[in-house]
Length: 141
Image (cartoon, rainbow, N blue to C red; front, side, top):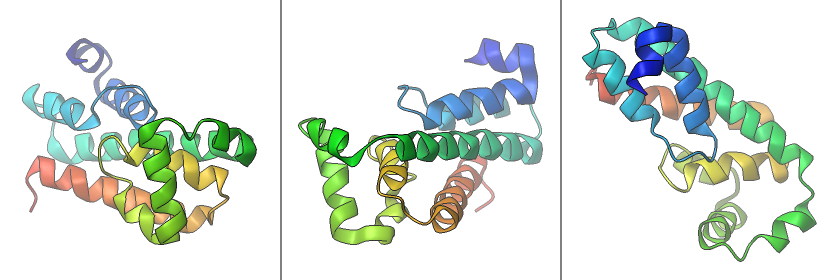
């Protein structure tokens, strides 16, 4: 991770944060912390981490729109996906407030696309929460 950030700077940070928004088991928070440890200025690092991670959730939503809901039901045997789907069925759009969390957050962004949630509502909620999470990491609060 630090090699990617060291060699490619902000673009490397954004790329890593994009990948972290998918189901790959990597941490965008760790990438942002690494960028700060490498003495990258906080505000541009915050911007690139947020842009990369938000691009990742848009990708997840788009992938979700390409999945048939009946295919989803075939995969609901997986514990995390089943739990996440249950949250979305119970709480609807309010479940997006959990989209920033590890483990269940990424499946929520795919499910938002599968269930055809309003894209603008999805994006505003998920992007704002990611931005706030990064602000906490940087220490602006």
